[in-house]
Amino acid sequence: MNSINVGLLGIGTVGCGTWTVLSRNAAEITRRAGRPIRITAVADRDTARAQSIVGDAARVTADAFELVRDPSIDIIIELIGGYGIAKDLVLAAIENGKHVVTANKALLAVHGKEIFAAAQAKGVTVAFEAAVAGGIPIIKALREGLSANKIDWVAGIINGTTNFILSEMRDKGLPFAEVLAEAQRLGYAEADPTFDIEGIDAAHKATIMSAIAFGIPMQFDKAYIEGITRLEAIDIKYAEQLGYRIKLLGIAKRREHGIELRVHPTLIPSKRLIANVEGAMNAVLVQGDAVGATLYYGKGAGAEPTASAVIADLVDLTRLYSANAEHRVPHLAFQADQLVDLSILPIEEVQTAYYLRMRVEDKTGVLADITSILAEGNISIDAMLQKEPDEGESQTDIVLLTHVAIEGQVNAAIKRIETLGTVLGTVTKIRLEELN
Ligand code: HSE
Image (cartoon, rainbow, N blue to C red):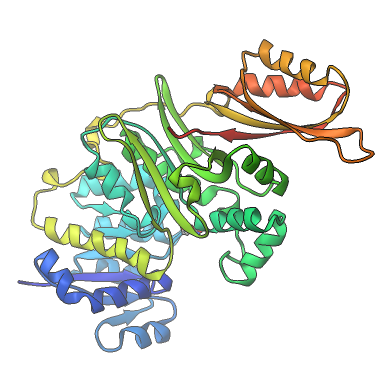
């Protein structure tokens, strides 16, 4: 049978991994796909390096636009990243009737609506398993494996860099800045780690998962995003004493009148499997009404784990190559005319539990004042930790865990607590999810 010809845009870490795995496992992949899949052309700015990787097996060009117009190419793999030229190239590939495989989470989370509409109009598919959680087949699971379910929520550790940093902070009791510097020295964190540590990368991935889980358009601009830069080692320690670990979670949750879409540091019970996902590993927990909780775990980045997802998409596209467009699996799991415009709820309307830490004067009545403010705000306390003041100290830390409450009411109560003369400085608030 004729081979499927693939054009690869960008032969960096993941591109190189894709080339290697596709060559190494060619026989096995052909048996699965039903015909050979060959990368016949590569576009990369560094043509000499690209040529040294592919040898004579593929042609190399610096002109990616020439490649997306090449009539001999069936599928384009976009591994350039970002919203700039990658967007123009993906749209040009679609315009030229080519299927696209991309690992570009930023592009899909921000411009997904436009890209999927263009693909739909042209009858081609844009596949993106590699865009979320690297090698974990979470897109496939959400879009196909769980399609009997009404998905209640998705919560994931979907950024390896921040999970590595949080694991190190907990293990070694070190402050954020020190661990970040070490992670950069070891090459775990990018020279500019902003997208990772500020939660933006995780929010791109959570946005994509929310669209597939609930059949809504991508709405990255409505996501609430809080990274780990302000997290203090002391809170990791107190959380541990209370039976919790702090993870950066991407959460998409169905509520009656909308969807919660948020990324922030979150306390989760230490006994949950997902709380024990350490280092740069990723994991996604999905709660469906029929199946219950399901957990997906694996490497969220790296050359071959991400190539694994890219090639799975290539195999899917190859199998479906001759199927009519209307018989294909829809891009966002739901049929294109069945997407609903459920709004993303503002963070003030989010309902979750909270960890509150405050520095107080160790005086009679301090706790009573704090708890009565919480009670007036309808906020119920679940657990409490109070440290003995150190020798000669008149101040101490109080840590409170609340039951589920409305964020706006918690914020109002915190404001009132911060005005008490016996409470020093600001209250540290970290959201808490039982994930049960
Ligand atoms: N920078 C990401 C991470 C991997 O640290 O998980 C690519 O999405």
